[in-house]
Image 1 (tube, helix red, strand yellow):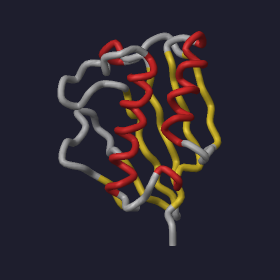
Image 2 (image 1 turned 135 degrees about the horizontal axis):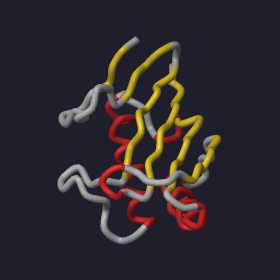
Image 3 (image 1 turned 60 degrees about the vertical axis):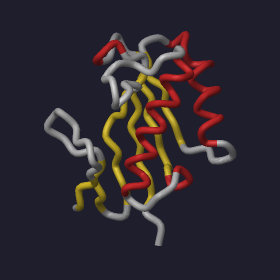
Image 4 (image 1 turned 45 degrees about the vertical axis):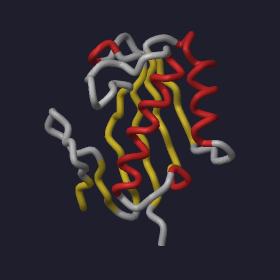
Length: 124
């Protein structure tokens, strides 16, 4: 196993990414802006893009692109957000369509509306 880290490490007892058996496992990325610690401004689409961009930072630190993502789990604070999340997600991924689950939950840290985790395949 190999831990992936970036300049700003998480506060909690976990690593942002872990490579194991040909896959990169990316820990949950919320929509909190790394500069402020508060949710990205602009509503759920902006928050979705922030979480995806933070995921992409971990991918790039692993020498991967978003096209390597095979699975995303997306946690949102309301099922009513599905349409807007899906729109921002489609904009980010373009023609690439990883497997995905969108799971409504009660709440997330720092008032965020979204958190996502991902699995990416290492490329030979």
